[in-house]
Image (spheres, rainbow, N blue to C red):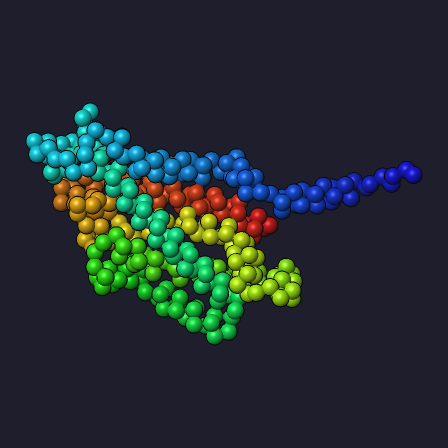
Length: 305
């Protein structure tokens, strides 16, 4: 039997439908490849972040000086072949302190963000899926947290708990979970009405299993984007707390603490504050640009718009 010849319009419609099906079945690897091809700035930002992380990890091998090694004869020395970024008021190499400070700043940016993402994701899914009084209690608690300026709330927690890395982790996690919970709740409200969730519920699947097996995987793209956008916020918050003198304390070092200690010598040794400020700016911009690139390929709403 001779196959009926398709009209030109029908052939175009069939190709578009096929392309749509292929687009919907894109794997994470395909999406990352598309981002690498379409968004060079996001790829460059990922490289910058990787360079800073590797430099922090291998800091002892990248500089000939110890973290707290002092040379009082070379106090406030300008950048030179021996000290590429100069020295501070105690003759310590600024590049060395910058590399070791990256460890603290990046850890303080990443760890509290992970904690806030876990807490916010769980509370957001529970709030959106269960609803009722549970939803009201969790969202009103989130409203209370969001009603305070994040830096002010972090300062109150730091003053209450005292100085230390653990206190910074708790303060930043407490200030950031509410925004994550709101985003995940909105995702859950739409996902709980989908057919596969209704089918699982009709089959007697427990709510906990539905939340973590069906709803959570569909929230992961949004959580990835939120992570890349919340890390720079945490880094800036830690830098602000350290600049105000209630964050990281000596003998530890962070970029914010370096900026604070260098402001006294801003006129005769500006590199003490400008170098860590530039590092903060580069990392924050890199995470933001990477987050924008990931959002473009992972957000289904942008994809279908």
